[in-house]
Amino acid sequence: MTGLGTPIHNLKRGLGNVIGFLIIAFEWRHTYLHTVFLRETQVQEDQDRTKADQQGRNYEDSTQADASMWRHTQRPHTTE
Image (cartoon, rainbow, N blue to C red; front, side, top):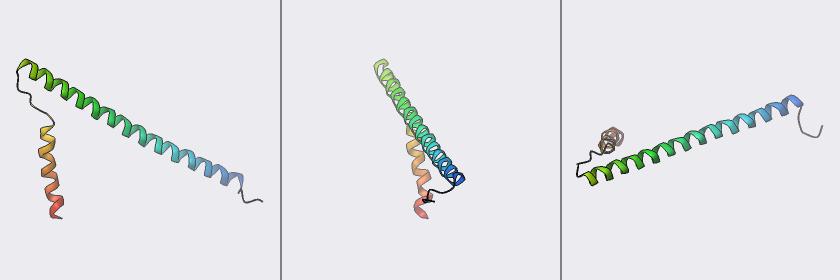
């Protein structure tokens, strides 16, 4: 033998490589779709804000709640 291993060992190694690739591809796709969602949400918020400004209305930013919520969730982590 030249150190290549048995056919079963080679099959397991190849299957492991395929599974590893598929996991990475799935995570990449998930991250990509999340980034697209965030960009689309940001564009929609900008369009709504611009439309409200043009019509002379006050615009309630739905992302402001996220900013205040961040402070509440960070407080317990800083005390630990």
